[in-house]
Amino acid sequence: MRGKTVTEGPIRYTFQNGHFLYSENCMGTVFVFSGQSSLGEADTLHRLEQAGDILHEADRTFSLYKENSPLSRLARGETSVAQCPPVVSEVWDACEKWEKVTDGWFSAFTPQNTFDPSGLVKTWAAQAAYDFLKTQGFTEVLMNAGGDILLDEQLSKPDDWRVALHKPVSIASAEAGVLAVIDLKNTPFRAVCTSGSAERGLHIWDPKAPEKAAANALAQVTVVGRSLVQADVWATACFAHGPRAIQQVNAYNSAHPEDSIQVVVVYPDGDLNATEGFIELFAKPDSEA
Amino acid sequence: MRKTRHRITNSLLALFALAGGVVLTQHFAGSGSSGSFSTTASGSSSTPSSSSSTAPTTGKPDKTVTSAAVPYQFGTVQLTVTRTSGKISKIDIGSSSATNGRQSAYAYLVQYAIASQGTNFSNLSGATYTTDAFKQALSSAITKLG
Image 1 (cartoon, rainbow over the protein chains, first blue to last red):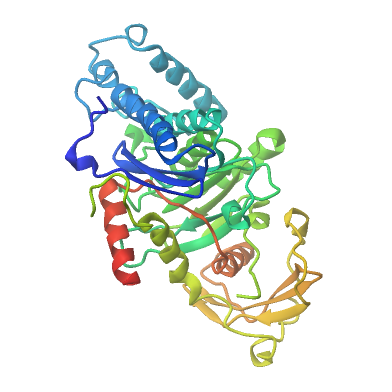
Image 2 (spheres, rainbow over the protein chains, first blue to last red):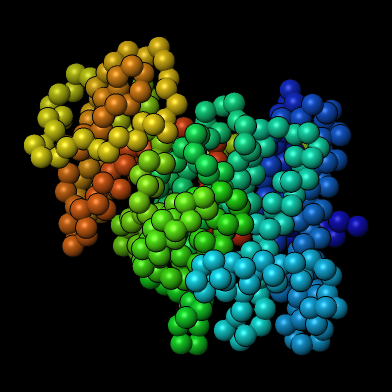
């Protein structure tokens, strides 16, 4: 059983000349996949649904909104990591690794000191779903995991390399619109992740603050990275860190050029700051427009 | 919203198209002849060369265009863009002001950001929206598209 409920809404799918567009409601948000398939419409849909199942399986395991998920039971102390499915241990290790990489600014331990890998699980599962689709021979695959973007290595349409960054307001608000557009063609970057309070309020805690208070010094952080999880984790870490995250990432990039990322932050009053090099990512205006 | 699995509108694309459409009004309104807006302020040199990461496009004639003066929270922004051999070769910052105690680099960022807004794109990154916000944005987009 896929476990869908009415509140999850309809699945949407279009297929035309091998180009598919598919969305899956999961984890309280929407995942959108698009790309090219050499299979027929029904076979393509079947594989997209399998990718959707990967997301739902991760949700069943890791959701802290589901009372009886392994993670909820772990948080209540009713079970141990060793008794949970092996992926829990895998994600736990990944969280520890990223906590070190970000110098402690990403942390999967809540103010109540329970394990909450929500900052990583969405993109971790999305990457798994994406990888599955790539093994099925789909090409030019673009994924939008609730606002976090992953691009295929080969894209033939120039627009597909361009990702708009939303203003730090809800997409449902009257002020919804584009802050800037970046172009990742001929760069080492394939992932774009944004953290902010526009959609879900102040939900990122500062792991270094007294009582791990909610971080609120920035309105929004967008990280351009080499992998989806890398960009997602750093977006959470930078949001928690606040304005000084820019200096942190500049130093990190100098020390780790092969893993470098680029970051742009929006202050609550609307102004911007960014890491050295971000300016080169802005899409060049088309003077014919 | 329809509940069938297979028959759906291009509503997702419509949302992205709307997001693009919203900012078009801030895009370059001038043309090569709108010299009244241009005249780069002395001292504001051209921007750092970043064309190495830009794929050359060919077949477009050399041209210089100047944007309208776009107001933003910290002043106004106006850019003059020069295209040579099919590539954006220069972006000059015209009359612009950035205040409020920010570092001067911030103004450049804002100007680049505004200059990029009118470009096409396929995807939209934002803070993780809820399913409800997504649906609301979709229906709003569809309504506006008529």
